[in-house]
Image (cartoon, rainbow over all chains, first blue to last red; front, side, top):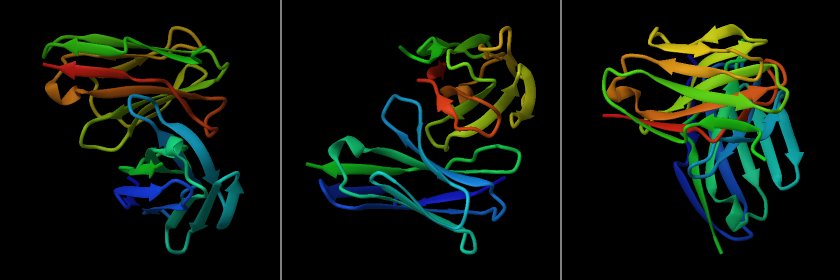
Length: 110
Length: 112
């Protein structure tokens, strides 16, 4: 069973700032790491995934993966109030099973 | 138009009863999944199906039985309901196993 730890539990940033979310996972053989966004009362929505060590950028999102330290981070540039949501880190194993963390509650204040 | 439909949105049941949670996807996907999100636990994988066949099962209890009557349907039957079963149940789908998963809006189940 994969263990996924996310930090911080909650994050408050002003509009326009960079939001940085962290995640550590227990299985270095995780096939890929996904980040999901979940708004209250809604299902999670996939934002970005990364398979290889290094970084990946999509729009305002950048994700960094370090398999040696079992760490992945998500950075949201120019954060907007509409980005306010819970962000879930989700490693996927070789059997395609996804394990979710408890999430980071992001609040972007106008 | 919603691509993944879950019915009902809210469900209240009494301990010991049986309920069926409905999931239909209109994305043309071949893989479907069930997840559970309890108040004090992270989102938890339950089952995965591919081409209407069970691929993976994380749920130890036989009280939870997926049912796939059509390619785009994956219902979840829960028998002998317990208060601990109270949670939001999410259905998801992907083009193939291993692809990006799309989640439905969830069914919030409360067992009294």
